[in-house]
Length: 88
Image (cartoon, rainbow, N blue to C red; front, side, top):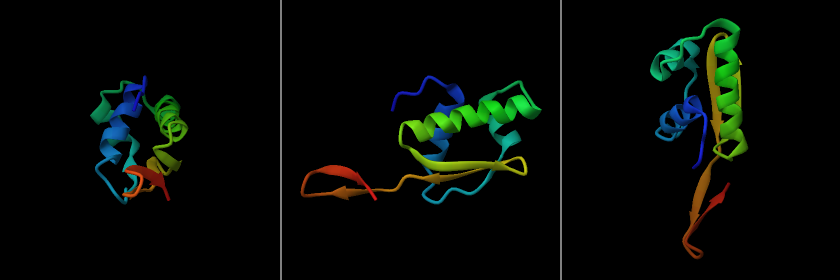
């Protein structure tokens, strides 16, 4: 997965380990990524990162509300007959 956005890379790594992700505080993401922005700029940075993950097909959708990021991951299943992953 090619992502040029460092926040998107961190979010991908984090959410790749969570089958059913729970909402994450924006400040938690900020601290984990080493971001030095706050308020509206923090929301924009995280929103751009989540947009990138939607664009590459990793996330189905996301929502930023009450200073938390909630995501819905794309679900894949393995088609053993074709040896490939398919989107559910």
